[in-house]
Image (cartoon, rainbow, N blue to C red; front, side, top):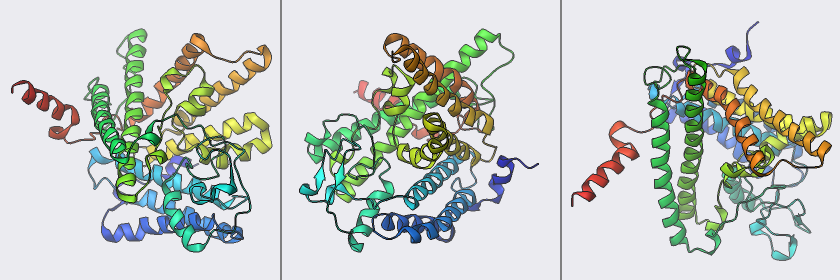
Length: 420
């Protein structure tokens, strides 16, 4: 029997090189159909059109994600195909959620204040828009540009229960916000380069190369072997944190500077996840919530109808597993489905165990013991997840040219400054 991974895998040689022609042929149909779904979900009486358009959108997203070669045939850039696959999978999830939306999405920021009952930044499920007419077509088209990239739903009415970390950005001038964001961008670039480089340096010949390899060195005694893999796992976790923050800061500058958005539309992405005292707080609001609505709409909600809360938790993490699996699969060496899905299934089981603990003891997981439990559970299972990254060559990817690595440039700058 042909495995799912084998069936869906597109080896690098079968991908088509990125050019103006292939971009128009493969990428644009996916984005145009996605954008059209974003327009339709704001309009009344469009459910049948959205249902009809959904299969086209999904097919175009799969075709773009599995056919285009964003790496230009360079092994060090295979991670760009991973980024493409993640984007197309996200596009597919959001389009599916939009197709099944029960009521039109409304952009709170553009509604008269009298129609809104609640805090537009709170994400509370009590937010209600009343007496709102159908969104005019031109307005829906304009709104769709924001909706297409606004993953958390800031300024919209559909982000149920979303918790936004507190920020002082709303009180800053646009210039002050841009300067502080630029400073954070530079910091995250250096930190990302430092942690990714440190992980690679543990074994440049194996998982520190684009050919990939395992974290688990069987020539070492078990204690040394797993201590080593845990250190690499923690470094890789910080790398993931820094690169997501880096991309977020780039987009914040881009949209505020070029598209006139306000600083309040770009609140913090994380809420100090290292201080999480339970898996519930870690995954529920302290880790970034970029895919929260997708995982709820496409994963949690359908399974919760069948299996209650347990099914909802499992469904959300299964969708997260699928997102990460197809991302790794796009690198052309297999996505290691058992390992990737296994990590997220175990996170779901951890949350279910916390719920059982609270139900039977009346106590919630918290405090120092909760902090210890959270990090032991996450890091233990993350060892195997990061090993999957290592095997496909993700850890060994070079994200900056050697002479232009942020850490190298920083050292040169400091040397020059100190010799003045």
